[in-house]
Structures are given as structure tokens and as C-alpha cells.
Image 1 (cartoon, rainbow, N blue to C red):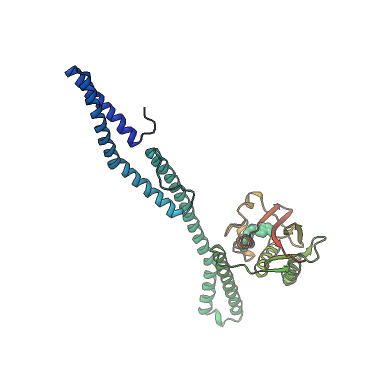
Image 2 (cartoon, rainbow, N blue to C red):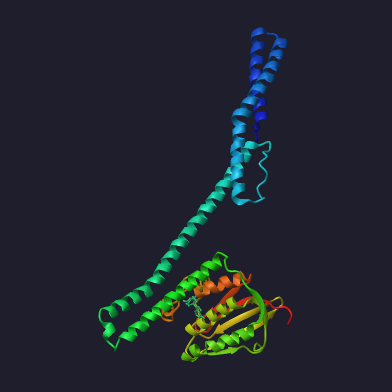
Length: 348
Ligand code: ADP
């Protein structure tokens, strides 16, 4: 009947119905058309005024209040200009309905997001406790064994102390990585940008990791055409952290007597840096989650190699803090390539 009722239209239709009834009744009883018409007009006018104000005061204003409250809640929460001003159109009921539907949708999405975060938090806490537990229990075991008498046994005392020291180092690395992650995630770490030669930096890291690589017979090399300066504009210290992480991983997960290559590609505004190895590779189904905190393909191999599953998460955070991207390609049995971009250093 009335598709989008307003207080005015509802009052008008109701007044007309009442007036028709009164007028019709008068015409029927008095048989006077003039009187019936007069009564119809007076009833119509007065009932319209009465119904209009009753609706306006008792219903419309209250709806308007609900509308304004919802609107205020939304705008204060999102501080966004996408929500239009709290002026109602001539169709307040469907407008309120629309607002309530949208509001409920927002609330649902927010609840889902909070649930996800809560799960994430629980999972993170579980992972951290688990990672802390192993070195702490090891240290506890060695110290108690030493106190219980092993300290006087020259055959084992130094060995146990060295083992305890190794676990302490592992604990320190874990705490250091956790601090790093939390600072990167909360945006506390400001990148100290400068122009530098990333080729010289990689050569430097090759040298510092040489001993570690030699233990497994792995060689480091630049790809053809890449053994020359490439200037980038980035945080030198943080990029060193990224490169060390990727190169150490290429040793940890590479094959004995394998090869690790570093390549640079000029991409107009950026330089693409690639670190590739011919190691064990990673199965396709793991690739999407590889940069998640604590995600490890082969947990025992990672632990054996002293990993805690935070390295690639830190790497990704650092590259993203530069406004750049990192990706991984891998083939099981053939090897893995990590590639990330950095802004080209101007003034070469
Ligand atoms: P971790 O401390 O375990 O090395 P990372 O975050 O550095 O943690 O790496 C996450 C996982 O990704 C590793 O546990 C390993 O399974 C896999 N991975 C990383 N780099 C390589 C690589 N070059 N080759 C094969 N697997 C790799």
C-alpha cells in the first residue's frame, strides 16, 4: 500500500480514513451532504494534526534518536567520512533498517576478526612457551647434574657447561628475535635509509659465513654479470639481517657440497635481489605459509640446525617495512630461490 511511509503520509492516510468514517456516518444518520462534507473536512484536518504530532513525537523522534546513536557509534569508531551525515531522508524507517543491517554486518566482521586475533594470540603464546621450554629444561638438567656431583668429574664437567652455554645462546637468540618481531610489528623500528652497494655487502657476508658454509662444503657465488656494484636505498643494518638469514638458511637446508648463488636484477626503479640454493627444496603446499612466525617445514631439521622458525617472518617484516615485497620459488630436490626488491640508490 504505502511503500515508504513517513509520519506525514501515515497521518494523512489515517486522518482520511477517520474523516471518511465520520463523514459517511453523518451522511447516513443526518442525510445531509453539506454537514457530512463539513464534518469530513474538520475531522480530516484535526485528525491529521493529531496523528502527525503523535507519530512525530512518539515514534519518529525516537527512531531518529536510534539512528543518530548508531551513526555516532559508527563514525566515532571508524572516524571515516564514508558515513553520510546524520540527516534523515523522508524515509526514516527503511533508513534505520539499512543502518542497523550495515551496523550488524560491521559488528559480525569485527567479531570474526577478534576471534581470529584471539586464536593467533593463543597459538603465538603456545609457540613461544614451547620454544622457551626446550633450552630452559636443558640448562636446568645440565646445572642440576653438575651440582649433583658431575662438577668434580673432569670427564664431563666442561662438556656439560658447554652444552648449557649453547642452550643459553639459543635462548638469547630467541628473545632477540622475539623483540625484533614485536618492534617490527608495532612499527617501533624506524628504518635508517641510506644509499649503499648491496653487492659489497653480500660479498662481506659471504666472507663472514665462509667457515660455516665450508663445514658442509657449500660454496657462495654471484650469478654471471652480478659481480659488480649495485646501489640500493635501504636500511643497511636491517638488509644485512635479511641477507644473513637467507644465506644461513641456504647452508642449513642446502645439500652437502652444494652451491648458493646471489643475483641482482635492475628493475627500473628497483633492484631485485635473489638468493638461490640447490638444496632440498620446499613442497608447494608449504610455500604460502613459509613467512609465518614459527612455521617450519621440517621441525626436527630446523631445531637441529638451531632454528626457531622466526627468521623468515623477520625477513618479511623488514622488507615490508621498506615498502617492498619478498617471494619464494622452490622445487623439491632442485632448490629454492628467495627474491626481494629494494629501491634503487640514485646517483650511480
Ligand atoms: P628456521 O629458524 O626454522 O630456519 P626460518 O623462518 O628461517 O626458520 O625458515 C622457516 C622454514 O622454512 C625452515 O624451517 C625451513 O623448513 C624452510 N626453509 C627456509 N629456507 C629454506 C631453504 N633455503 N631451503 C629449504 N627450506 C627452507
